[in-house]
Length: 191
Length: 132
Ligand SMILES: Nc1ncnc2c1ncn2[C@@H]1O[C@H](COP(=O)(O)OP(=O)(O)OP(=O)(O)O)[C@@H](O)[C@H]1O
Ligand SMILES: [Mg+2]
Image (tube, rainbow over all chains, first blue to last red; front, side):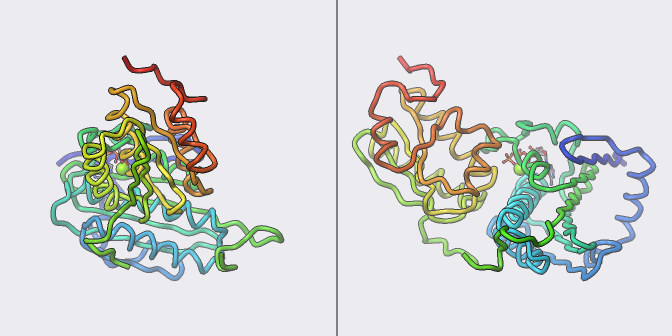
């Protein structure tokens, strides 16, 4: 059995999670069914879909529609769409190598924060810390640029990546939605 | 919500030595695969030297778009060609800035400006060794 690796990134600082935390996570992952919404979150939503490229736009639209309940700015909404698109694309391309598979996306709220998880049961990542390095890619042959994790880091407030070789990958992201104030245009104000 | 297979991912226009590529669908992995294929066909057919990406048709692009641009850049640079972009909105601008792509793909206000610059030998702001 390969070891579970976990890395957390807050404000651009990456830290390898201690083994106990990863083990705990691994056990929880085994017990948890795909349908269960993000733990400890309000208004949980979970969605399972086929690991197909055309579902990338579907997933980011769902996440954006879900986040809309916190009345985000257009920029915050764009951030969420990009981060989700990156995580789902990675699951499709790297997790399942563009073959068959299931991706699960879980959404939850905690106060003014949106919590998003994207999980696959595919190939897993051999070295999570290296994989998160900007420009690092194992698929240069597919014209990948290695910017996916860098965008998730830049556009979200917190990013956690857990992976186990041959078992799969879980990406958890948190985005704080700014409080409404005068002058900031909100997404629901219309274009 | 699902896009039709037959719908083009981008519009193409040949303008002298420049091929203008204007994506019309959100430039994600799904769309990038299509643009890559279409653009390469167009480059081959029209013999384009330079490429101009016109982003005025889209408001979304992720890292897959970066890959498509880098890939096309590597194609034309070998023949001494350049790439440029125009029609960049706020969303696309953030991606291009973060990825550092402006270093190889200078940004212009509109097509006219970009075409004029591509016509010159060296691009302003672009750190590109001229091909020989
Ligand atoms: N879900 C996943 N399953 C397996 N491997 C993954 C997964 N997500 C990422 N990886 C690995 O991490 C690397 C870095 O991912 P990242 O998204 O940063 O770049 P990329 O996907 O290679 O390129 P880009 O996202 O710019 O198109 C990938 O090349 C891949 O090896
Ligand atoms: Mg990626």
